[in-house]
Image 1: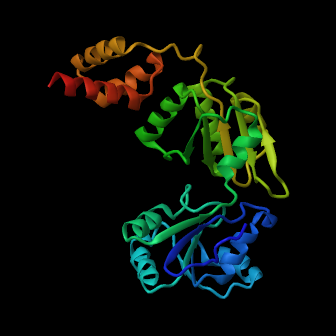
Image 2: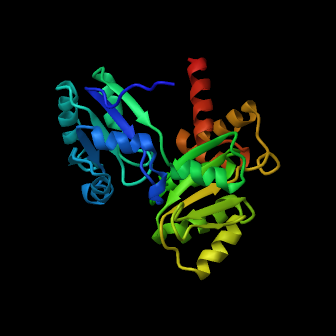
Length: 288
């Protein structure tokens, strides 16, 4: 089957790069990174090693969370001038816990073509190698590092029935495992992937408790992807909508704000904080 020639003028290419093993770079991605006019890199020094090895002569520019708003107009101007632009992250697919999403949105709003060159992704790599249910899953990435928002996310995970994929840095891994044990229980299924596709790849499980015990004895090193099994129906006896609304209104009568009432009721109700808040908001709209 004949394929279209790439790159096209004025098109943004979102290119997946290896998460560890350089052999995972696809022939299509390799050819495009050699032929494209400009490559926006999360870190030009890091990606420069890969691009130099490929023999790519493309213009390189940095594109990361600290210069997104100044860099996007420049890249859009290049697209308007008919140049082909690729965006890559340090590893994996741009836009998944890495820069890229805002550039893609801006390019589409400006009516430029956007084409994704598929490639490695730590989240899906860890998921399919975990043995946990993958028919329905959600991606959390990095949790907020502290405060109420982090606590609320952990409370949501306690009742989430889908498999969940998270990322974590080595210096925060033990804290996260301790919090998962507290909110989800030590027997909750968990597989922790370390250094995926690299020489020292490791898989640790099969539960939160087992992972916590392992990394308490072996100092965490490298990049971590966690696959958390969903809460079972037995663990989450869900309240009906009517009971939820009744108890939410009672909590509000006692002086709690709507968001506080939703957070308070979530663990016992088997509903997420967001779901409870939306239920209350919808009921109030219908009452008006």
